[in-house]
Image 1 (tube, rainbow, N blue to C red):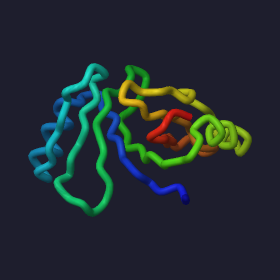
Image 2 (image 1 turned 90 degrees about the vertical axis):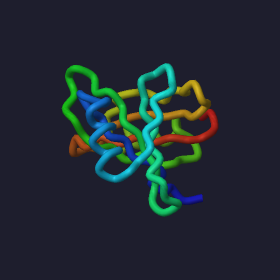
Image 3 (image 1 turned 30 degrees about the vertical axis):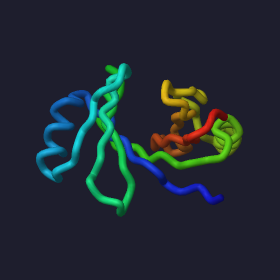
Length: 119
């Protein structure tokens, strides 16, 4: 199957302003119609990957994050921990059915792993 980078996420302390900026700059469509405050980005292209904007928690800085598709989020999070990563958000099933986990690699870089089916 491989493990492609399948999505990006911009974590912002000002998500509405961030969505407005990138939408106007690149012509991206931004959809904020969900209960979690997530703003889904449609870049308008079949090339590259799609993404979203998430409100940053108070203690976090603004940053961009890559999502890597895996077959089993729980197993991949465990393996990442064995390799020195720190789990920030344990495997969690989202309202639309995807499962994600957010980690910091051994150097402190945040990344996420996700699966379209429950892990």
